[in-house]
Structures are given as C-alpha cells and as structure tokens.
Image (tube, rainbow, N blue to C red; front, top):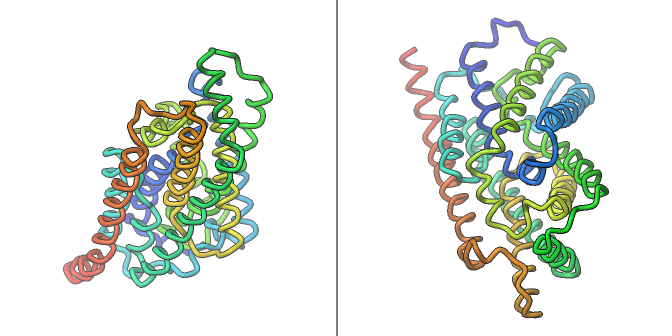
Length: 335
C-alpha cells in the first residue's frame, strides 16, 4: 500500500460516504428480497452474521487473487485522480439524497463516471446491454414455466399455508450466491476512493467498516427503495425471493465472465424484475386467473415508476459526472 501521506482526508471521507451510500442504495438489488422475506422469520443477528461472513470471504479472496487490489480488477480503467479534492464527495452525497427519495439509482454511473467521464459511454452501453439481457432472461424464465410456481405461491399465501423449511435453506444459498456476485461487480464503486493496492491492515479496516454498515442496514430493515420490491408480485415471499435472487446472481455471473469492466447492477436488477412481471401479467391474462400484485397498479404504472426514478437518477448522474471536472479544476486552483 502507498504511504499514508498519499492518502488525504477527502479519500477517507469519500470511502466512508461511498460505503454507506452504495450499500444502502444497492440493498434493493441484493439483500432486499432476503430482508423482506426474513423479516419475521430469522433473527437479525443471524442475518448479520451470515451476510458479513460472505462479505469477508469474497473481499479477501479478491484481494488475494488480485495482489492487494480489493475491487476484483474492475478499477483498471479508473486510476486514482490527481489531485484528489473535496469535489469527489459530491457523488456519494447525491446517492444518499436519491436513496432517501426511493430512487434505484445506478451507483456505477454516479460514482465511477465522475472519476473518469470518458468512460460514460462504456458504462452506459454495458449497463443497457445488462438491462436487456436480464429483461429477456426474466421474460423467458418466468414465461416458460416458472409462472406456475408464482401462481402456486399466490394460492398458498391466500390459504395461509406454511412454507417448507427446505425453502429457507435454498434461499440462504441463493442469497449467498447473489451477494457474492454483487460484491465482485460493485466494490469498485466504493474502493475507487482508495489507492488501488491495500495492505492487510487497511483491507481489514475497510472490511470492518463495510460489515458495520451492513449490520445497520439489516437492523433497520432495508430502506426507502424497498418499495420497488414491494410493488412486484410475491417478492416478500420466501420462495419467490429465492428464485429472484438466484436468477439475478446468474445474470451477474454471466456478465462477470463477459467483461471485467463495471456495469450498473441496478439496471440489471430492474431489467430482471421487469421481464418477470411482464411474463406473469401475460400468463394471468392468458389463463384469466388473478395472481399478480394488482394492488400496486397496472403493469405500465409499476414498471414505469421504476424506470422513471432510475432515469432521473441516471440524468443526475450524467450532470454530476460532466460538471464535476470543472469544479475540480476550480477547487484545485483555489487550494
């Protein structure tokens, strides 16, 4: 790790803000279904232990495999800026504001594009292709047969039938798999604030900070963006949550093999949910049996609300990314 003199106070504050903002916003994608379905089922201390154990394993595995680089090699196109000023604190603060509004903002756009605006095109292309891939997978997977599971789950809930314990075991496996894939993809959004190589002590401190934030997240039950999940069919049900988590993890695993360049996992998740919800609504009309979340409104309203908020977040991200460099030049000139 570089000498401490190369790490200024803005890097440390930026890392703390990014850790808190990225994890709190992206809980929607990765831990949202897990938190919702285990709210009255599993003690929160056990949830915290499980999530932190997976986090520690994945972070240190990536750190070892990439010779001290903690973001699984996804920061190769994002060098540490010189100079590193207070202006780089704006992106995670904006993430916090958008999270409070309940917007599923892309932290990759908002954070990474601010460091290297030249990569905006690649980030946008990578994320849109990820959305389309996940949408097609969701539409095909649920449309070709998994809708039967969702209809069965809906009926079981209507009859207040108990859930088999095997589903609890399956969900913990699917959550661990998904959380691992998310850590591989999105840690770049947090570690972009630090030197690209960390020693063991620095890595341990960073991991402890991240785990502390995750514990707080679980203790409060998610956050405002949980509403995006609650508007979808059966997402608070343990069985449906298990399938969603697994398929989202598959999408991220596939993208990880395709490229080491970061992408917006938020857009991948929204694409998967959109394809799933469309497939379920089509099957509901085909068989004239109600089993979807009509209490949240029609399909266009449900999906449009998600895309609307995500698009606002994207627009703000681009404005910040394009405007931050002149601000950095100004702050450097006056420092």
